[in-house]
Length: 338
Ligand SMILES: [Fe+2]
View 1 (cartoon, rainbow, N blue to C red):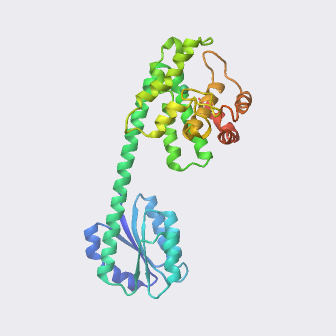
View 2 (view 1 turned 45 degrees about the horizontal axis):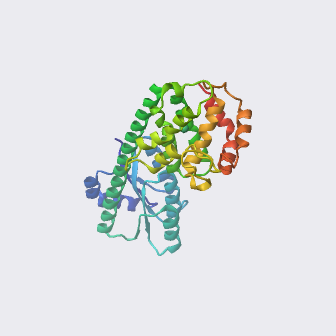
View 3 (view 1 turned 90 degrees about the horizontal axis):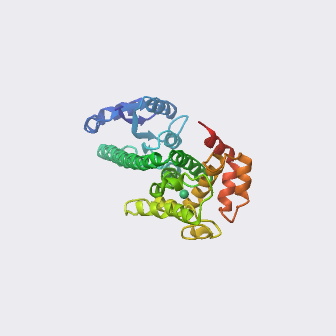
């Protein structure tokens, strides 16, 4: 693990030297390594080098009044480079505008006035180190949970893959198109990440469908179609657990709904269909059209898009389909790459 750094910035060498002496006990208690810089520019260089070396800048304490880059300007730039660093501003005079600027744009952690009290400074550094490590520990835990979820999803995916390799490849591509649509439609990062994860599960219920129905080359009889439709409810019952994300359940249950209400299984209409399911519906149909199936050859991008645009507002959500149409070339590349 790389060093964890406390960065002090002041244009007066004497101030930096006195900080070095004064902070010795707190540095030894917290395990932080001290770095000093005589200007904001020099400090930013240290931050860049530290990040490149796999180190972390836990806390940066900056003087406000310096020639060249001011303290608040440095902290704003620092926020861009290292958003996790806790920023502390030191000012020797009442500079409300600078403090305001730093609070609003650099999410200032603390503000101390010069001359500072050693006890205040020590407490600030101790609490910054504690907070930094706590945030990292929570993030690490979340990452572990996410990795576990990914593992579970890929196990479920593999179960489908063994049942039907065509479905196995299809679900992976549907996840890629769904991620693209959600991102391009402006959904937040968390939504995009989750739809990428859970859209893989949309056809999980096909594990319960007989192979001869899944692989049938010709047209389905009414009974066979009724059986095929059941993959939605089988999938929903597999995911019917409290701890499973609602988004996963919505995708599985509603990805065959139509905007005009004529889909299956619930017959929901318009915005009553969860948006994640409306996205996966587009991804799912597109993939079925542009790739080869036992019952049809692959269609070209233009043929496929024309067929889908003909169902704009009947089968598909018009706004989402428009987003997809703009990005159709990327989707087609996903469909046709090895
Ligand atoms: Fe499906």
